[in-house]
Amino acid sequence: MEKRRKSKTNLRPVEIKKFKALLLAKRGEILDNVTHMEDETLRKQRSDLSNMPIHLADAGSDTFELENTLGLVGSERKLLQEIDDALERIENNIYGICEGGAEHHIPKARLKAIPWARYCVKCASLAEKGLLSREEPQRESDYGRISEEQDDNFDNITDEQNNS
Image (cartoon, rainbow, N blue to C red; front, side, top):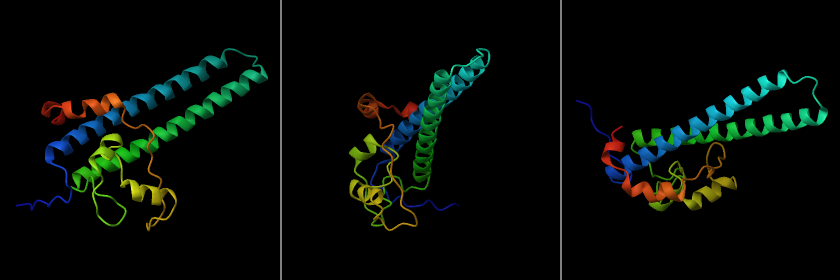
């Protein structure tokens, strides 16, 4: 018989299910955004091929748009990794524990705003300054924060949504 790991988190199972539902919803939203951006960029490039000759100003604008889209896609992919890491922490029963070294809890209000948060506010500040003792300094992204509407719906997530 497999021995169950004792959870270090201060979150109740129902709260963890709600955070998991938020993370999965945000993950789906980001995947949709990335797919849409990539499709639009490819469609634009294909249509531009038929519009020869190209004016230099148009070529510059197109290059700017492409670089901007690539930057956005890169940011979204980093956020996807943060979300995947948070989902892994849920599976390992350490979600909501600050990775800053002291094993203190991340406040629920912070997790509601940034469900993929690795650090409490104090440790996040230290990590951004490169003062946190880790193998490599990491910047915790708040890009893509949960909207106020999603935050308001946090308490309304049903068990039915959590089990999907």
